[in-house]
Image (cartoon, rainbow, N blue to C red):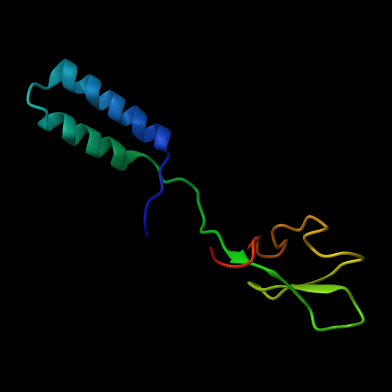
Length: 102
């Protein structure tokens, strides 16, 4: 699984590596090791994959029910559609309601 890190931290590490090269290392080999080790030490960001789904009208003519295509959780609304009620994510699984995978 890939490791996601903050780009600002990487840029700061590169800046420090350039400073290290200018101050301490004539040949540059020590700077490369410094930058590689510093980037490897940056903690992983807290990320999760984005799940894409869509609201599907539930097969029940008596209610205004909608189902998440990702987790299959059903919601009964008083009126309108989930999008018109600003349900842009599934409250149950957090899937982004943008019509499926992009």
